[in-house]
Structure formats: structure tokens, C-alpha cells
Image 1: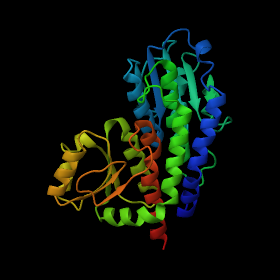
Image 2: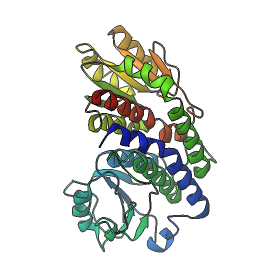
Image 3: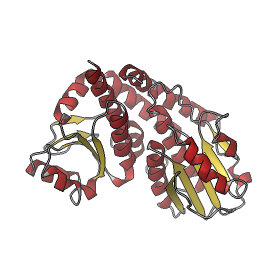
Length: 328
């Protein structure tokens, strides 16, 4: 794995989103659901490891908004929701975790309906699928599965809509949202030379970097932190914005604290105020936050689903930059 490979993977993210949007406009990957499920499932179990689990948590929270009984679980858990016809299992095969997924799916095989999101139809995980949904993510050269995780999240949102979860933006068409996110991602990558050096300088610290996001988009922070750990091997941590003042605030008092803040929480200003008082530094993504050392904006950053699918590329591109710097 190299920084150049990660940069190449990131360059392919807009095309991966566009390809998925084109596919969804012509084909419903969940068209077999009515045949597979006799009734609305009592429980929906989303499984993954690493970044795949983080996007499962975001999707499960979205599903619960409409009363769906969705939960995200570590694929390494020994047990979770009881198997049976009332449980729908969704396994996300993106970025590893095949051994753990297969071990837990053994519990549900032939007892619960199983959907697998993954690009390899010959993988061990795919063999459990009653419905196999391609991610259409393209090659993963760097091992960080950036496009796969992005497309998996989009497909999980679509599954929620098919099961009755409301769209955050009422009346929004997911294919159109994907196209907007693709254009926003392409713009950030094209302008990387103007914002990456400034952001990298603002966030450089011997104590690492903290990624902070609203609860509804916590997967952006968690996946970004994992990309920074796996690529340039930077100390990186994820935190929820409202929770920050009750937990990470105390770390800011004793470290050279730097935060990449994904804007949009009601608690952005409080976090910024406390961090400034503690002489920390933050960079805001997707919105104006008082006291930010730098701000990264893009078209559509005030639309929740566009932000959810676009903003992870900021941390990913920062990872590629620091990775390349470490190599030099």
C-alpha cells in the first residue's frame, strides 16, 4: 500500500458514485425483497467490521427514525438478534472482516433472510446471500476501501427507504443525491492543492488528530480516523460533537489538541468555544464555525445526505498527503 495508490483510489470515488447512481436509476437492487420477506421484519441486523460497521451504525440510526427495529453489530460478536423469519440480516463485505462475517452468518443461514453488500460474487461471504447487492466500487489499490465504504453507505440508505425509513431531505431522489455528492467530491479533489496544505498545517500535532462529527454522521469521523491510522499511521480518534464537551474536552486540557470538525451539530459553537479556551485548534468541514483555523466548503454541504457521502474524502485526502510526506 502506498500514498500514490490511495490518491488513485480517491480519484475514482466520483466515478464510483456516478456509476452507482446510473445503476440505481435503471435497476432496484432490492427488487426481490417483497418475495424474500412475507412481512416487515421485526429486527434488522446490520453487520460489518471497521469502517463497514461504522456506516452500518449510521444507517441503523436512520432506520430507527421511522420505527424500524434496526441495530448495527460487530461481525465478531458471538450472538445478536435471534435468528428466524422475523430477522433480516445485512452483511457489508467492504474492507475486510470476511472471517468474522462468515462466523456470525452461520447462525442465520437458512433461518433468516440475508442480504450481502459486496463486489466479489465468489467470496465466502457472498455464498450466504439470498440477495447479493454489488457495491460497484471499482478497484481498491490502497486497502482502505474508500469507494466501497462510500457506496455501501448509499446502498444502506436505499435499503432503509425501501423498508419505510424517511429521507432526511423529503422527496429527495437518491440517484440525484449521489450525483451531487460525486460532483462535490470531484471538486474537493481538484482543489486539493489549495486546501490540503493549510488543513495539514493546522492539524499537525505530536498528539495526533481528533475527528468530530454529529451523531447522525459519526461514521464520517470514525472512517476518517481509521484511514489516518491505516495509511500514514497517524494517531487519530473519533468523537461525537455533543459528547465532546463531556469526554474529549478533558484531553484537550492536557494535550496539543487538534480537531477536524464536520459541521452541522447544534453543539458546534460550544465545542469550538471550549476548544479555543483550552488553546486547541480546529478545522471546520462543511460549515462556518467560530474560531476555526481553516474551513473547507463544497457545493451541497448543507444537505445532510450530500454531506454524509462527500465529507469523508477530506480526511482521506489528508491521509494521502501525510502518507506521502512520511514517505519523503
